Length: 261
Image (tube, rainbow, N blue to C red):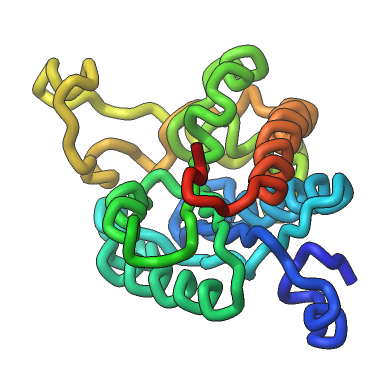
């Protein structure tokens, strides 16, 4: 039994050992080029979440990881078979219900650990501000949390099923990565993407919801072939150090009138 994993602990333990902080990992179910499993985002969320909670717990933080949510918003990938969409409004209702449950059980600090770029939770945090006693924090681990280290570790991290995600898969769920049985090479294309006809969109100062079937060939965005398990382990070490450190601080911080300032 890992005491920081809710799905593994029992009531006998929980009633004698209350928690201070909950972590909710959120993934997705969608294709990831030809070589990574549909559950890649959820496997990543689980691998990262369990390790950061373990590190924080072993430093004395009363933190618990909730079971990962394996679905996300897939409206831009629906041309690909079995991309399983949950609309943002539906996801907001689900998270709101879970927040209400935490409030009922006197856990008033929640970190949403998001592993899917199609999920946008900042509007939900704004909506729930002042409506619940639970204080919500959001970590998109693939973005600002690790951006500086990504530039050091990877040739090019990639946007979806590229080098970074493939490296994590090789390190933490390698049995699910498709390889040529003779050469050991990844069964994947190079993750090339098409530019739009608008330079403003291509340069990033105008944004759109990208139709993934027009953007990519096999859903991959970013070249996965330079990935290694060692690169995935390097990234994980950074994520564990940074996120667990935050959880330790969060657990120790009193919920006074000035929180979180």
